[in-house]
Amino acid sequence: MENINSEWDNLERLIKMIAAQFGSNCEVVLHDLTKDYDSTIVAIEHNHITQRNIGDSGTNLGLEILRGTMEAGDRYNYFTKTKDGKLLRSSSIYLKNDAGVVIGSICVNFDISGYLLMEGMLNEITNSSNRNGSPETTEVFANNVNELLDHLILECQEAIKKRPEEMTRADKIKMIEFLDSKGAFLITKAGDRICEYLGISKFTLYNYLDITKKQSDQGEIEQSAE
Image (cartoon, rainbow, N blue to C red; front, top):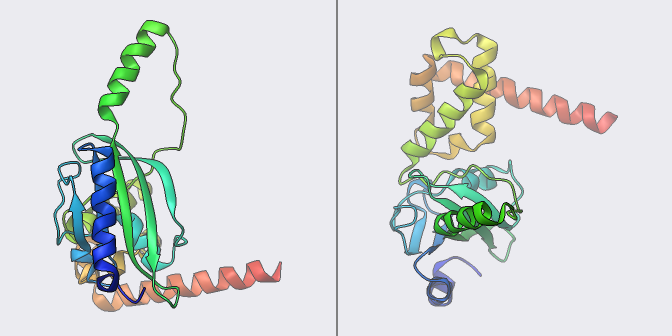
């Protein structure tokens, strides 16, 4: 496969078939990950599940794949939540070109909220619980990359447990390292938003990124020497 368009007819038929097979509770999404990350969704069925549309952005997990933080392996049967509280059982496969580079993904998000409600009612009657499976994964179904970036910033702030004005230089470097690992800087103009949030200049941002890269390289060297 050279690109998504070269197999468009087959890919479109595939996502339509999956959506038709599992019904209106099943959202199926095709991402073209060679596009700007603000508009990776090129086809979507049953979009009422996550309220996304063609031309909307990818999720935080896709960013981590592109950044190289997470290995580009397919993921099956993991649990996620939408902004309005739906619990989904999700699976994602990553499409590669002939050179082995990730160029797209197909994601299936099945809304199991209604089934869990029925399960709860049955458990109440039978006094048992049989829900097993994968742990819940934090995947953000954003409509645009600004919303996705705000989520990553908030997630990092909650981990550091300080507001920007309370952060030390070390805290800010830690935050930059976290955001970089999550692929935040793959988002166009993310640097401007992060500089504004942390109250630092572009020069300082690049300096902090350089520091985190040197720390990462040093860690790899020490690990290989063990």
